[in-house]
Length: 283
Ligand SMILES: NC(=O)c1ccc[n+]([C@@H]2O[C@H](COP(=O)([O-])OP(=O)(O)OC[C@H]3O[C@@H](n4cnc5c(N)ncnc54)[C@H](OP(=O)(O)O)[C@@H]3O)[C@@H](O)[C@H]2O)c1
Image (cartoon, rainbow, N blue to C red):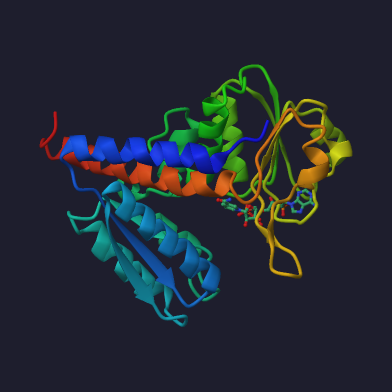
């Protein structure tokens, strides 16, 4: 079974559009981008397009490549204090002179729609998230949509980054999977992977997952974004070979990627609803 993230994301965005219309709210997202990285600029454009589609207002703050940590923090603080802004997204990676941790920590947790602030990661760890990071949340949504059993399953997450691997493992744990997190220092990595009923690869290496590393019938989730020499997009998984062995698999493109943006839109609407509750404008 091909897990069609594009189709699931379309469905979620349509539903969200209706929910926003019915709510009478006008959620607003602000993005901050530092520098001219073409991939980052493309992602930010896609996020603004998605906003437009579902009825979320959006503004873009563009800072120069040589912006200092202080300049980025000032932009974040302005947005924190702007009552018309519900969500703040700082496009990562930031240039090396900018302290990424300080910037993430400066975002007001109630506007942290990427879910990277320690408060939001802590809530996720405690099993009571408000904003979970969008990529792993999108993966959980695909699994739910296709009714892939999670409870009691052996889940193996390869990768332990703050934005993907760690929150992915916690979301799976919160859904009662038995979770193993693997990384570059894991001993017997292939054996660990072969034990997975649900295998999530968030490594960023072309051809990283081969069929002999996959249990027959497993669900394989490919988070990787890799480009070959001709500039063609691939995931971490050798898709054509692994699909023969897996029970279900996400393609790249059209799998996890579109879900990430849909979850960002949902988080922004959630932030707007929460803000409205705090202001007593919605009961
Ligand atoms: N589709 C989407 O929406 C989306 C969103 C975010 C990211 N991505 C993509 O997902 C991939 C991972 O992103 P990320 O931000 O998590 O990257 P990252 O911060 O570079 O983390 C990569 C992880 O892979 C592990 N790793 C590297 N080589 C390994 C090996 N040989 N064996 C086992 N583990 C290995 C690293 O282990 P160590 O910790 O030990 O170094 C690290 O934990 C990238 O391709 C990224 O572009 C996609």
